[in-house]
Figure 1 (tube, rainbow, N blue to C red):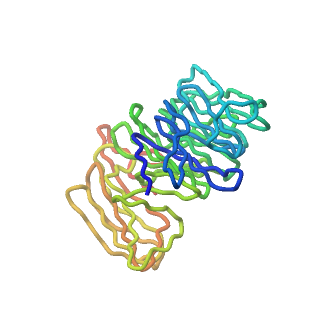
Figure 2: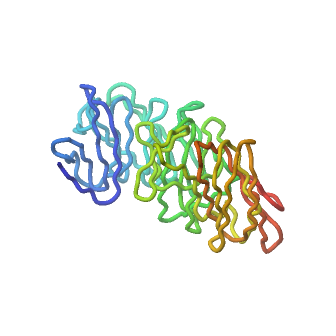
Figure 3: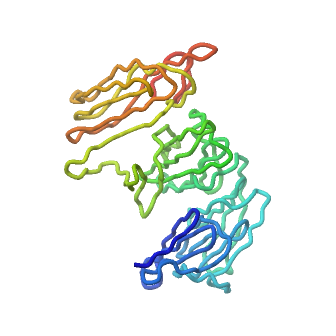
Length: 364
């Protein structure tokens, strides 16, 4: 076996070579490495590089920080040697900050800076490449959050210091304003994935809590979700990690014999800061499930049957954060989970969730 140890963060990109073999390139903060079954990680380019990359028109594009875009020869992710029509580099200086992400969309490469976006037209040979700057005007972009969905016309989605944005290749638009997101501005590490027309992003908020959001690419509507660790996308699969294992997230999966399906949200405040009462959990689906809710001091559990399609579990616990777990029995299916909370703020009753209003709230 050949072993190659990388230090720091690593990402990989894959593309086909001229013989229809898949080439895998590892991008690290200290250089690029081509995976070879016999030799392990073969250095392609030493020195300071970024860990963002994309494949467009059979070329591999990546970044040599802060403002250099590298591109390989067609069908050869290991050849970055400068030539008129094959590999080379483009210098893209800007007062928008450093390049933080690359994305392929609408047959072009989009370069995301900290505070701006540029489009690189890659049609034809390398000598015909052109660059166009695109107006933006939003908050600082977190590069690790940039992802592209193909449903409803190709769109990019990304998280910034002032919330979520969608980008159609010409204009960026702020979305999900109702969620009132407040990402940590310094030291933020995001994870994202795209699947079945949905954009998933996990991040840390200013209080240090892990947050998850799912956006429907076609409508641009989003809602809060559990924060999965190590969320990523690889060859069409959404992956995450838990308890030291890698899992694939699927919409209609079949569990191995004897395995148990568990949905768990750890220490969530349901999007609202402060002390609140969790009155009930309403579950829609089919089959049987065991529901448990804890406020960190007390825990309540109940086994329910969803033969009627919906069940409401009375909780009556007060706290700032709650852990909610659903253990599914006998091939049960959960379609929707809503909570009914009531918060006592200093100025009176208030609530969070998808839409702010006085009094109680129900959140899906």
